[in-house]
Image (cartoon, rainbow, N blue to C red; front, side):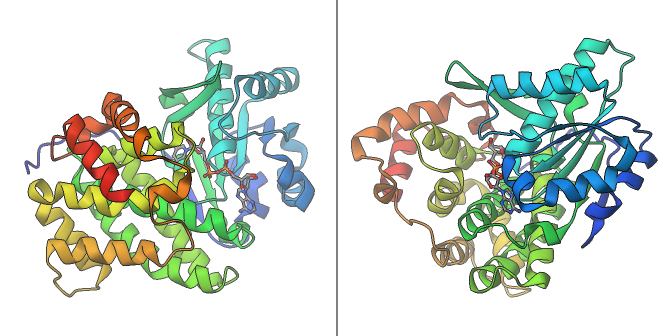
Length: 364
Ligand code: NAD
């Protein structure tokens, strides 16, 4: 595969460490923020984490929106925007998983729109799952039943605060689901046609950390060392998505999402199948993933796929599409949707409709 690439870098401050949430006010002030909107979901209002963030923000807290909903519905963005405008905010803290971050990104971009080009609103991301959205300028908003995805540099977080303690209570299904998603970000980032040298380095290091920590977290979600390592892996996976773009696996997983399969489950089922399909075009890259997972040994490309498969099969998630409510007759339409996605064009091995159907049947 050619090494040609083009990339962009944006100035982001990343702070990582247990207890960093309590420094949120100081960190926001360092950024120049004076009036901050706290954007999070009801579960954080109930478990006290939103109040901790509010205390840390102190006098800089100007408004609270605590009704983040999955898939970022348009009405929820409008509601948060009303609060932000009334409070005259100059920064948005998005605290939570990909849905809170998506809402915070949409609000930030729209506040910038409303204020003209000189109007800079800062997004501060405090991620609590392993989805990786905090490192990308991409977000989706759902209206009239469809998710509309946008990439907007103004929606890239200027500050990301990773506090591994916030992930101690991440439920097991979200731990393994968003963990499998992070692993897939690393794998696809290694062989995507849009990959960069930075993304490759981050993806390999991220995959090693995820492979070390995810099995430990199945045993004990309170394992602090594993939580910390997994969050660092998810950060590297987020850098990977931002600097590599994804490929056919992600296109298929999004098409499966449209058919009702949770994203983490789709990731855990599909990844080895798409890796096998990509072996003829990306054997070196897939072998590199195997080396990183085996810590220096040199598995063959086929053995590398088997390693990823056994890691994913150890997760308490369905391993076949038929267990997710997908019927075999759904496969052609899912393949059509997957190939309509621009993401599929980042795949090293070009895929036809019949080949994508074959991949899906192998996973069914
Ligand atoms: P989510 O944000 O929808 O959260 C799921 C549930 O888990 C929510 O009820 C939330 O309150 C709860 N939760 C989150 N963290 C928790 C914690 N630490 N402890 C206890 N409960 C917690 O789930 P997600 O998988 O993180 O995000 C999915 C969304 O993110 C999708 O909309 C997806 O499209 C988007 N996404 C975007 C990107 C990107 O680059 N833009 C990347 C990945 C995912």
